[in-house]
Length: 154
Image (cartoon, rainbow, N blue to C red):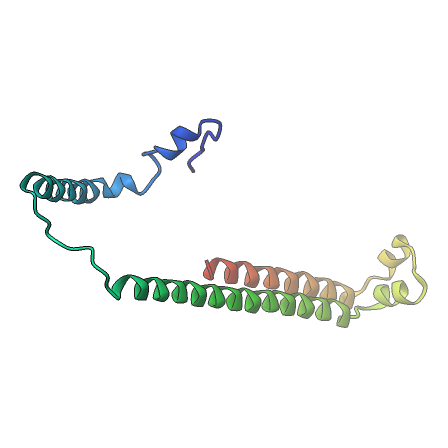
């Protein structure tokens, strides 16, 4: 993990360590040197290697880039809405299982007459234990699913 000191913005702008430049500085330097050589040759010899005339390439490229960015934004929001609906559906499924598993005598005592904790402990049977384990497992599996889905969609 790279920790940044955001009190000095100049250091953040010209940072080398922790950036992609650590791996790509050689090709970047090569392209920069080639561009400088072409510019010096043009300036020194007094001729141009290309013209900056009116072409259809620039406006067409701008239109296509804007269209692509808009399309990417629409796909992002569509995917985000699908993820949100999936998370809501998993939450509702977990809630349905937790409500539908009724339990045994202890659960009935709680639902019917709001029995105290000591009374519910005395009435607890195997169905209450199974229900508790089913609730714990569905919550555990639901959390594992949404975390794995979130990691997969990054």
